[in-house]
Image 1 (cartoon, helix red, strand yellow):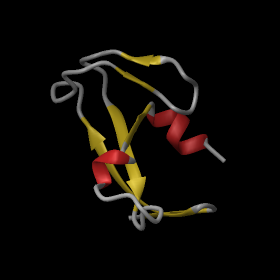
Image 2 (image 1 turned 120 degrees about the horizontal axis):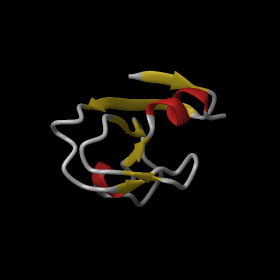
Image 3 (image 1 turned 60 degrees about the vertical axis):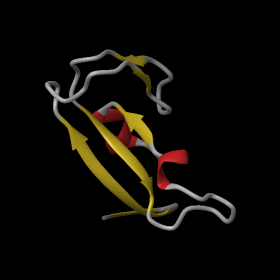
Length: 69
C-alpha cells in the first residue's frame, strides 16, 4: 500500500515477462507495449458505486507513477 496526496493506493509491479498486453499510461497517455515492465495501481478505497477493483485499476509507466501529482 502506498500513501499519495490523493489517498491510499494498492500498487503492484508487473515484470516485462508477465506483461502480455499493450496498455495506455494514464500519466503520459503513451503506450506501454507488451513485454515492458510497469506498475499497476488502484485506490485502496474505490469511489462509491465501484463494484470491482479491476474497474479502476490502471497500468502506468514506473516513472509516470512515481512522479505523478
